[in-house]
Amino acid sequence: IPTSVNDAWTLAEFEDALRKLAALPEVKWPLDLKLSYGVGEWFTYGFSPIIQAFGGDLIDRTTWKAEGTLDSAASVLGMTLLQYWIKQGWVVPASAGDDAFYGKKTAALAWVGHWMYGPHKEGLGDDLVLIPMPKLGAGCRAATGMGTWAWGITSTSKHPDAAWKFVEYLLQPEQILRLSNANGAVPARKSAIAMSPLYKPGAMLNIYAQQLETIAIPRPVFPGYPTITSAFAEAVQNIVAGADVYEELHKAALKIDQDIKENEGYPPFGK
View 1 (cartoon, rainbow, N blue to C red):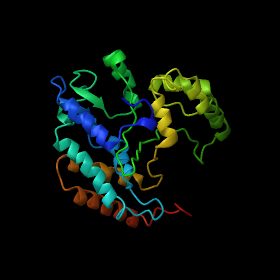
View 2: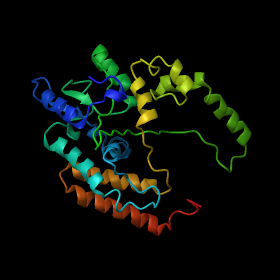
View 3: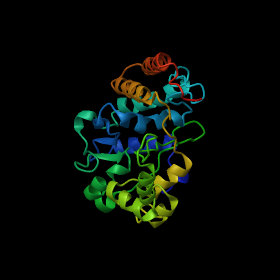
């Protein structure tokens, strides 16, 4: 069982584990991908790292065109892999609900984020371990998602100095830890990580911090992101249902590019 990002499973090792787990009588599905979350941001956050591991992406981050990137051979390979896992019967279906891993205990692995640590720990106790994202792509490359809600001050704020005082307070390591303890998120500063009983080096969830420093890829910081994520999530849903992978990614790419065209590139972005 891998214990750090450096010794993460390769694709061959990951699929070997899935096959062996599937053969166990107590395992109904080896892998819970949280398909029960439904079409939404989870499909982008959770599954775009698969195409990124192969060298694909949601959009070209220089030209801001999706066609040729989202529907590239690399992206198609990544989503074909996801579809293969489902066709093998390895993945918990959406209809089975959320708790196959930690409640019913009929799934052996859960592909999900830090927000599920509480329920998982409560349900599995000392049997719970955290393992890194497998190295799925060519050259044994791995990728993972990153980014969440953030604090900001609007340019039209009537009290920017007071707002900054509040944000400055929240950015203190002790306050970051209070938030992290409440919502389970990775502490946003290295000094806070070092103080965290869950995330400090050697702790239960430290692999999340390791991944953020080594393999994390942000979602596109672009005004048209709502269309990017909705188009990709819809494509994932159809691919999960068995649709042609290239056709679904190509349709999503065209939808994204059409939105960008209709909004004239979202000026003043990039100026």
